[in-house]
Amino acid sequence: MLSRLGQRVPPQALLDTMLRIPARGLTNIGWPLRVAARELARVPARDARAVLLSDCVHNAGPDPRPFAARLPRLDVLLDTSGEQDAELARELARLGHGRLRRIGGYTDVAPALGAIFAH
Image (cartoon, rainbow, N blue to C red; front, side, top):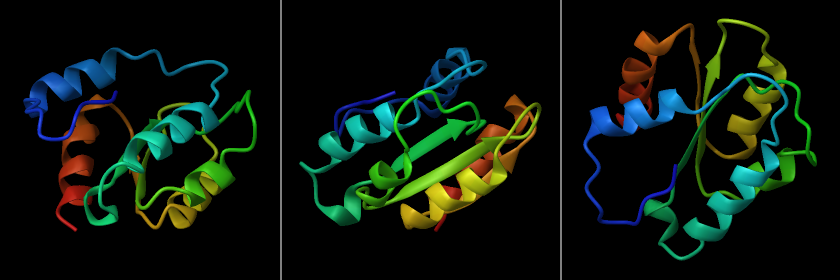
């Protein structure tokens, strides 16, 4: 989900929108990371941040690692409720100079986001 800088988005509305995004099956993780890099290139690096909520498995597109490395900050919330690729998630967070948080369900999203944005 992308929003314009300065646009106020109530946290609950953001969380509700994120949780409605289908997260199972084949994904192309590289595409949203590439879009995020393009959008975040317009803002100062200190304010640029992306959060990936994914199971990081079944990547159906190009290797997402180069796209993660282009981001000033990429934090990854890894859904561990089903299949997952913890190694890829860890590497994406490392390359994106961010943090990895594991979540087991929707109730873990808000605390994980709070912990990520506290740093």
